[in-house]
Structures are given as C-alpha cells and as structure tokens.
Image (cartoon, rainbow, N blue to C red; front, side):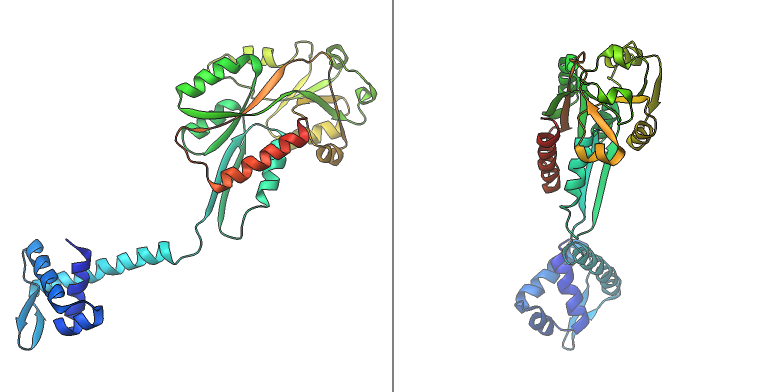
Length: 307
C-alpha cells in the first residue's frame, strides 16, 4: 500500500472532488484518479462512489479514511519529531583507569560541549570492567591499563574479542605523598624507604582470567606491611593530604592537583616497571566528533603530564 496514494484518498474525501484535490495537491487529476484505483485494487474495496455530485465515501471507504487519517497524522508527528525538533542530543561515553592526566583531558573536553542537549558518561574502573563495559556496548570507548609484561596477553585477548586498540601512553609509576611526609625532602627514594609507611592502593587491580593474588603480587612491592585499599580517587587524595604517613603509586600527576591537595610527587629509583594505557573500542565502530575531541584533549594532556 502506497502512503502517497493514501494521502491522495484522504484529500479527495475531504474535498469531495477529484478536481479540487488535484488543485490543492498540485497533481494532475488523471494521476490522482489512477492512484486511488490502484489503492482500491490493493485493498480489495471501493473507497468512493463516483457520481455527478462528486466523490462520495462508501461505508468501507469511511472506515478506511479514518484509519488513513490516523496513520498520516502519526507519520507527520514522526517527521516533526526528527526533522523540526531541538538539535540532536550529544552523546559520549568512556570507561577509564584512575589517572590525573585522563581526568584533566575529560575536564578540558567538557568545555568543548555546545549548548545542545548532552548525555555524557565517564567511569573510572579497572581494565576488566572497562573491557566488559565496551564489549556490552554500554560504553563506546575505553582505556585499559596494564604492566608491559602483560602486553602480549592483552593484545591477543583484545583481538579475540573484536576490539580495535591503539597506544595512548607509556610511563613508570611515581610516588605521591603529603608535603609533610618525611620522605618528601629526600632526593632519592628506594623501596626500603617506604617500609615504615602506609600505602594507599586501589582495591581492584585486575587482569582477566589471572588470579587476583598473582596480579597484586606482580603490581605491588612485597615489602609493605600496611596498606589501605580504596576505590575512589577523591578518597585517595583526602587520605594522602591528611595523613603524612601515607604514600601512593600513580601515573604522573599534574602540578595543579599536587598543589590543590598539598602533595609532592617523587620518583623511586628502584621502580623500573613500565605501564601502558591503551584506547579500545569495538571493531567497526566509527569515532564520532565528540570522540575525536576527547582523544585530542587526551593527547594534549599526555604531552603535558607524561613527559
């Protein structure tokens, strides 16, 4: 059934005349007549009785025109909703590790949003949850973090699951601590220097399909007896700034963040392990304008903080 033919029939019914409908629709009268005959043939009914008085609806025709008017009204509402409504909503979603340079990039990215409606999601979590978030399509982009020695494992796993991926950054963890921490004045810090202090650590380092105990052992030095495990970055800064006996391993932080919380950033001469942050998204996904804007800010933040 042709929607255009339906529209012609409704107009003829409204005006009661083929000629008047032709004038209103700016369509040749024979074309309208032919369209209505095709419509009647498709439906297997007579919509109109043709007479000297004009076009009169049959009982079946009245019923059909009622349906047709309702359908055409719905079509009109759909067209208005998508062609004449407010601008299309901006959408962006990403799942990331907890890192100052990434959150700084996201803050700068947020400034680029237009005045149009927006729906933005930014989630900090571990690599396994990020993979699940992107795999299940809840999030379009993800950044995963892993130690360099797991590089082959992660690349094989990402390819197997159908991800595209690209390197964002490589770095070595540094220490952050309160300015009041006795270690803050040392020029060189070793693993042994850290033994008397409390380590703040995120509670969910995780490599898919590997035991958590093994990962924790690989990720954290064994010579620390006191650790506080947390999940939120805000809590880590509160603990570090308020308790001078704490420290934390992090990707390099910005001077702005350090000054805000009264912290210092120090290198550990014994720490040689390299970490990688890798951007992931599903194969075939086409990066949006907002995705590209965020990646631009991410690259700029990396250049500033991960020198």
